[in-house]
Image 1 (cartoon, rainbow, N blue to C red):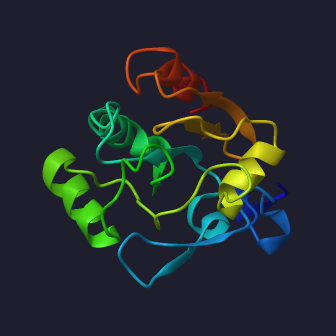
Image 2: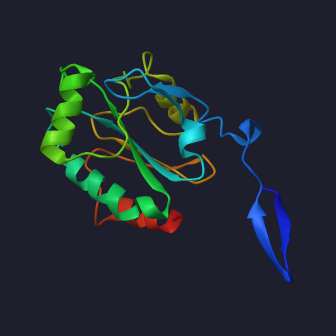
Image 3: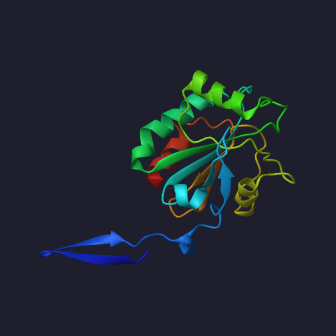
Length: 181
């Protein structure tokens, strides 16, 4: 990004130029609806410039306790420019059968989830929501199960993906996040 210089007395500081739509990552140039709401969020406007972890989630899965680790990552690193984006999906053995309101209540009450959660989507090839289609086009596989994770750098590029068995904290995923921060 171009930087402009601002003179403050005898001191010069560099200030990044404002990011405009022309610098939006094609991966993130999408509007998505917040979970159980009507508000639509443009992923570029809301999250570009941050390290992003996209996760397809489910409330009745053996991996559901990963919500705790995902929230721990979010709380630990959000001040450094990290965010988790959750997308509930009922694609795998109907492990997310509830309404969006039920999913939201479950996440908040059971795991105190504060990271952004978005509309319930399909993530399987052939019916995947646009974000998951773009992740696949960028070189990652479509999720094979719930809690598949995609790591996106500050420039909006897919840098890695992690299978459902990968725990959020204390391992290779957290080390990859730290390298990007």
